[in-house]
Image (cartoon, rainbow, N blue to C red; front, side):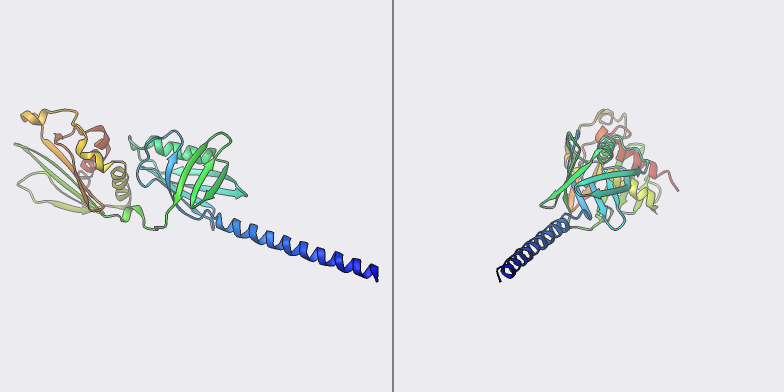
Length: 266
């Protein structure tokens, strides 16, 4: 009888232990499920970069183990693997547009991915680390809206006695007039041009546009056409100071040169 009692006690303890283990395993599974990487993350902090282009992001797809992203110029993509809280990024490739103002951020973001080896997610904030540094922090975005779907208008005008240029870029088309005596022409962008113009636009901090100083003042004595760049984005209008046509502030130089070059394409 005493032997049977001991067996029952051991069986009861084992059952309780197994129930507790099962419960712990379920808790761990639930915790792991909440740490999913899938989704789009807006980058808020990047090692060695103080000011990021707006809408710098990383996007993860756990069904294909693919990562893609954007940092103001080119779009890039690659593979990643996860083992616990370890992560490795491989085969990252990018398109090859050159963007003077945003290349450092883009290069640093790709380098950060290549050097990251651990990650964590807390309160929907992704952190990528290596043994020495926190490389990237990014908050999960609830919006699935693509950046290119944002409504925007860019207008460039340059006027003097013998010069008249008016260019209007709106989403997927460009309208331009280079002479007062001719009619305006309109054409639709191809996909590459659409990506290019949005990349240049996104590299500009529109809010500081009115405060950018012109590097030269020849337009003040009719030595050059006076040019103005206007950006309408997210319902807000931003207008530059007058600058010499062909000599914009360096912070808008890439955008202006891209717009002007697009009027040469037929």
